[in-house]
Image (cartoon, rainbow, N blue to C red):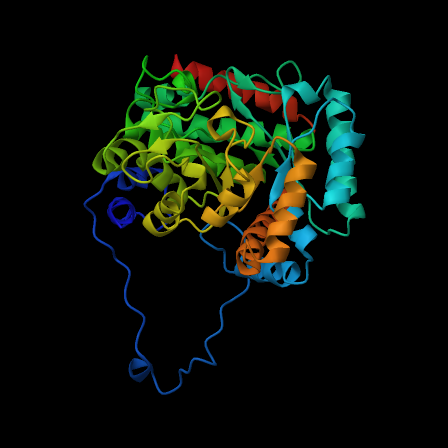
Length: 436
C-alpha cells in the first residue's frame, strides 16, 4: 500500500528512543532501517532454543506499559462478556454536572471511562467529586485499575478547566520557545506538560487529550491555528515529543492528535467532513513528522481525525478508514491506543453505526458517542453476533486496560506534590517567558 510505504520511509530511522537532541531524526524520510533480522533456527547457538527464550515481563513496551502489563490486560479481557468488552472500548459522553451520572454509566455499562467537558464542571470541589465518583464506580464494577477520565486541556482557548486549573498558554508557545532556543524550549515544554499533567491528576484525571501534533498552514486553517506548535514540521516534532515526555513524567496518559494531521484542513470537522487533497508525499513531509516523533518517544495514545484524505481513503473519515490505521500501525510502528476523535462531531454525523465502523477499522477507544447507552448496546450486539470479531474487541480493550495499568503504576511512583498549583503556575510562566 502506498500510504504504508510512505509512512515506513518516514519512521524507518526513528525507532530508537533517544535524547531530545535526537528529534531531528523524526523529520527525515530517507533514513534506512537498522533493524537486524531474527536469526533462523539453524543460526542459534547450541544452548539457545525457542522454548528457553523468554521475555522479561518488566521490559517496557514501545508505548509505555510493560510486557507483563500488556499480557495481564490480555488475560483479563479474555474473560469478559460482550457487554464488558463493549464498555471497555468506550469513553462515554454525559450531560450535566451531577457526579452520579457518569458514575452510573461507568458502573452499569462497564465503560472504560468518560470524557469531561466544560459543560460538566462548575468548580474545583465539584470536579473532584465527579472524578472521585467515576473512580469509585470502576472499583464497584470490579476493576483494580483506574478508569479513563479524560479532558481537553491543551492550553490556550481549548481548556475545559478554565477558571479551575492553571491556565497554560496555547501550544504554539512551545514551538516559539523551541525556535528561540531549541534546548531551552524543549526543556520548558516538557516541564509545562509535566506540571499540567500533575495538576490534572490532582483533580482526579487520568488522561489528557493533548498535545496537538498538527502542523498548521496558518490563516487558511480554521480549526487548529494556535493550537498547533508550529508551521514548521521539525519544530512541531520537537514540541510534540517534549510534551509527550512531560506527560509521561507526570503519570497521565497523553493523546497525540489529530492523526495524520488536521493542520492543512480548510474546513472544521466539528461541523462537516473536510476533504484534504494533499498527496501522500505532502502528508509524509508536512503532517507526519510530529506523530513519528511522538511514537519514537513512547506516546501511549494517538487520536484519529475525522478527515477525508483523498490520497489514502477518499470519502471515508480517517477515524473509520482501515488504511489510516495501517499507516499509523505499520507505517509509524505505533502499538498503543488508537482513539477516535469525538463521535458526536458533524464530520461523522449520519453515518450508520459509526462506533462499529471505527472499531472494525482499527480504533481501540471510541470517544464521546452521541448517545453512550445506545452506542454501548449497538457495540455489544455487534460483538455478540460476530459483526465485530471478538478477537478485534479483545485487542482493543486490552490496549486500553494495559495503558491504565501503566498509568496506575507511574502515578504511584510520582506523587502529586502539595504545591502542585504553584508549580503549574511557575511552569506556565516559564513557557510564556521562553516563547516571548
